Image (cartoon, rainbow, N blue to C red; front, side, top):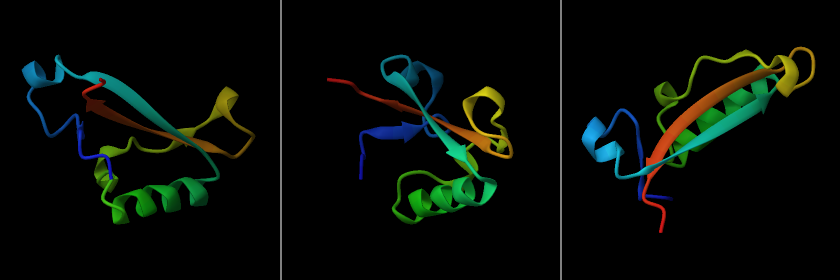
Length: 77
């Protein structure tokens, strides 16, 4: 588990400025995206509520696929 990363909701903006932002994108069927978010939550990586609401993937995926985004901040050495 990457404990050096914290959710954007966990830190004040002044702390976030000293950390680098990374975006996680999940693109796939609605079922696969939802299940992956649940698995990452079970593993302690991110709360389900930290992910964006899934929206149509459009150019990022195939017809019927969705995309969900998680923003994390972490110290990059």
